[in-house]
Image 1 (cartoon, protein in one colour):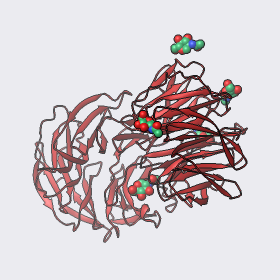
Image 2 (cartoon, helix red, strand yellow; image 1 turned 180 degrees about the vertical axis):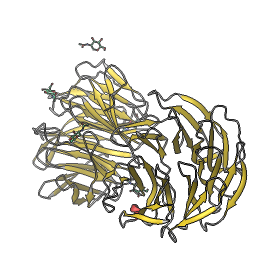
Image 3 (spheres, protein in one colour; image 1 turned 180 degrees about the horizontal axis):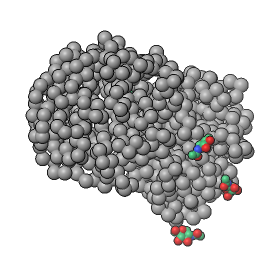
Image 4 (cartoon, helix red, strand yellow; image 1 turned 90 degrees about the vertical axis):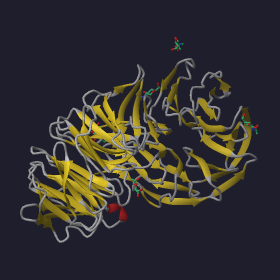
Length: 614
Ligand SMILES: *[C@@H]1O[C@H](CO)[C@@H](O)[C@H](O)[C@H]1NC(C)=O
Ligand SMILES: *[C@@H]1O[C@H](CO)[C@@H](O)[C@H](O)[C@H]1NC(C)=O
Ligand SMILES: *[C@@H]1O[C@H](CO)[C@@H](O)[C@H](O)[C@H]1NC(C)=O
Ligand SMILES: *[C@@H]1O[C@H](CO)[C@@H](O)[C@H](O)[C@H]1NC(C)=O
Ligand SMILES: *[C@@H]1O[C@H](CO)[C@@H](O)[C@H](O)[C@H]1NC(C)=O
């Protein structure tokens, strides 16, 4: 296990529940391989993920690109990673220290960089992509000066590679259906092979440099002589019935792994030209295979769903492990198994949703990841809530849905007549959902009572004893109601200077807190709702997105689109801990406490982060 990263004397980052690679239909995913064999690399948004290959729940994230990063590769020495982004910037950074100090930044052209490779001596880098007047460049990793010319193609380069030994050679695969071959340094165009009939998505040299292979949208895999570029053979006829997006040699240079849009991955014996293994990955569009990696004993493919599949040669139809997660911004979360008088040893699950409505269930250390299926939301999940028996959510598809925690699937749907904003569930299984100027009360047996409000509601929270309900409004007021059966009687109103964005009770019911659109957080002591925060909690620079008390009620966390996480102590209002850039460069959208001292946050970086708060 890696040690938690210290943020301050009080806050530690325990782990990152990483996002999946960001997949796009019809586009290959580039994976980076670690020369030391410990980790592998991929990108999503402006982050590069460095994931432990044996235990993918261990993950480091690099978030210094100011725009979408599309590829990242280790230098053969393992000391550096070069990553290329959509504006043509290549950052070369240190892998040894945790801060990942920047060594160099170059911009070989203005346009996206889709793939890059290092020479075996760590001296030179080739990049390919789609610049304004050029599609590739080769330059020195130390000074950035050009060490050749990558020309000859007329359309975007999708893939580049170097021969791993002398004499040096470089290859590119491009969208003019061409594979180009270069000698150097300085690298000069030598030949172009036009055997493919569609986009060439991937070109890769064998580790021993004897051969190289190309894979294309025509489903064909061609093998060439590594020194001369002469075409030697073809694998299959064709290798796949769909586009080939990924191709990787095994460490012995004898075998090739291919990943295809025909929803299979295959292993080939290169010298015999024979198919050794066929991995059928499913029948859904999302089971298309868009990238692959063969590192040590690990054979990995990426599905269009973003899932990371660890293949098992002895059981080709069942991956040994499938790593799931989000590949879109996280919008909402809750933790099941922490409320009420639960057995502390019982399983706790984190449920999180992304803006396309995908819901993932994680165990508390991120080693077990499952998709929640069944009657799922068809649009963004707006809010989650859970009690000791149930998990409920409301979404922009105008529904409230219930997850059966035993079967891990959505099993009950309640249709609403307006768009919901927030949801909460009491320990007596009554669901309260606010939508525009309505509050819906849904009983466990299925009856739904609606009350009209004379203001627009933004947020809702129920007292843990189920006796009081707080609703935040666009009328700049917090309304507190007494709950009596299905009747609500307004008992208190708090005036604010702007509309309310969040309301919450502490699990013991001894505190209440609210946040308004001017970024003020207020905390009240119950039963009198005496305000104790004295207008001192105004720390955020952007809209507050979540407000949650720790399980013992001794800490309050708020998150915001300003990327920050703030921690307040109701017992000492002057002591506020600020975690700026909690999800670096990305809005933090939700949070939930696992224990008295452990908090999860979710963000637009498609990740969850686990924090320890002393
Ligand atoms: C990842 O992205 C693809 C393409 O947009 C989408 O179909 C898929 O549902 C996403 N996967 C997850 C787990 O969110
Ligand atoms: C992770 O959690 C699982 C089950 O909750 C447990 O079996 C496993 O030992 C945990 N692993 C670590 C590294 O804490
Ligand atoms: C709420 O506060 C905002 C910002 O101060 C103000 O513009 C608006 O008029 C107020 N609305 C009401 C109903 O008082
Ligand atoms: C959480 O805090 C409460 C109150 O301080 C304490 O009684 C309880 O033992 C704590 N729980 C854990 C797991 O530390
Ligand atoms: C409250 O926090 C402040 C600032 O950290 C500290 O100086 C003070 O001693 C604390 N007060 C109590 C009563 O703990």
